[in-house]
Length: 260
Image (cartoon, rainbow, N blue to C red; front, side, top):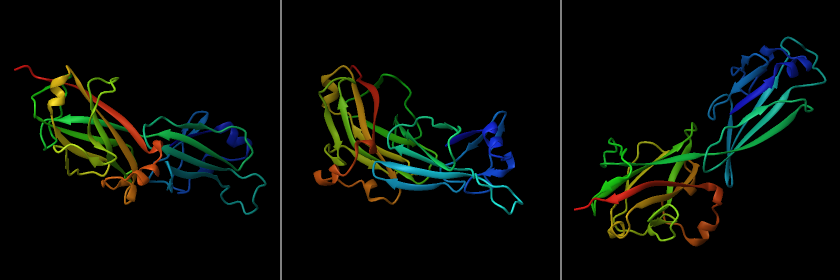
């Protein structure tokens, strides 16, 4: 989270730069001319994390304190900051303080992001850069999805993956749906990080029917040790408990079968 507070605004309240800090008093702002700027990490500076249905919330507070002053002032600086992340793609969030009556609160909404990459082997050390990617029928494709977030307490799980002739076609072949594996060649591989998932599948005859094929996956972001991150197959009732904001769609391709 990035928070910028006007130096003029602080002076109007009688505060100096060294009297401004976060929940962790060691976390101080940088002076950028007319603005004091806090760069607040999701897992430091006293930031609090809480799951709230379809979002994960991060909270912190900007405090103003007059050191060495026993009598408290009538006006106190206390900015309550809330960053609620919808669990799909990430956007920049920046707050500029104004002249509102203090204390006051701010809530901003952001989005997570994830990417999808193809690898040549189950070792996952040889990333595929070619586009389109030419493959052989029945060749195994190794896929890795990675959540782009600085929060180490988040996990990623594959919810649904489908093959399409192109990014706009309604024809499809389902590999996994609602975490229920539908294709016998679909396999899950161990990943070294909670924010990554790895899986593979073979290039089926579906690839032979169309000049190009794309892979689209729906991924779910959640907190580690949360039952929502279980890879087990979801029943319809459990599925209804998940909000659409819990997920992100990621597309990769095109793939083409090599001519013999």
